[in-house]
Length: 83
Image (cartoon, one colour):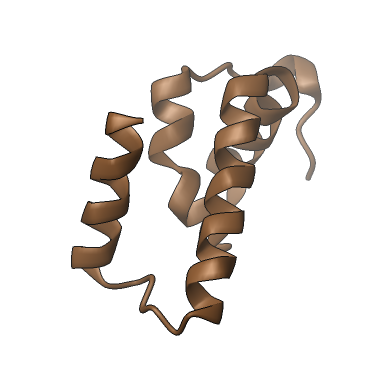
C-alpha cells in the first residue's frame, strides 16, 4: 500500500544523509525509503549529495576500487566532510 504524500513524515537532512548509502545500494525499504525519496524531492542539497555519491560510486567501480570496504568508505566520508 502506497502512502500519500500527506502521511509522510518529514525527515531532517541529517537523517536523510544517514540513509544515502543504503538508498544508493538499494537496501532501503518501506517507510524509510519513502521518507527519503520525499525528502529528495524537496531538498536540493540532499538530492545533489545523492547524485554525487552515485557518480562517485560508479567511477570507483570502474577503477575496481572496493566501494564496500570500510577503509575506503571512511576515507571518502572524511574527504566529503572536509569539502
